[in-house]
Image (cartoon, rainbow, N blue to C red; front, top):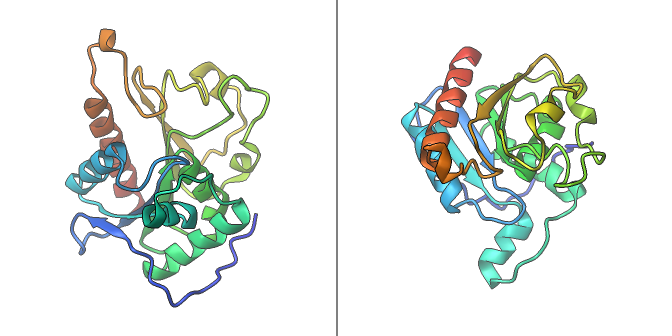
Length: 216
């Protein structure tokens, strides 16, 4: 897992929310298939900004290309994604006052470089512990030794990892879990739960804000 920074003169087109004078900025990557301004990302960014964080959203190169030509393409390989996260941190002014994270794949990539980059914290929104229906294909090895303070917000009905499965994983003591009640991978609950996706997003954002305050 390398995060060697390949510096570029090309500015990353960040999408900012919240007070630019906030003590901490949370840099949020998107998931594998949806852009930085998807409905989920828009609502989460708004809720985090309301909680006092500055939010910087960005897109990996493959998603930025889609925005230009409209063609859907699969995610870049880790050899591209991980160094790009180093460039994100550099362009945002360094790691000291930065929480790095993202939705699903974006959060997973962030977790793979958080220690090397020296960011203040890590946030994962629906961590893909394993592919749906393939609990034997775990993506958790590096999480056992993670040193960066981290918070994973994860739905109790998320097919990428159920609570009883996650309870048996070897996770670092630096990792906290916020359970999104009745939430799917995008935090959407069943109507029968009496909850809404917006309610779950707001509660997750509140947990992240509390996490951020403890880092200061």
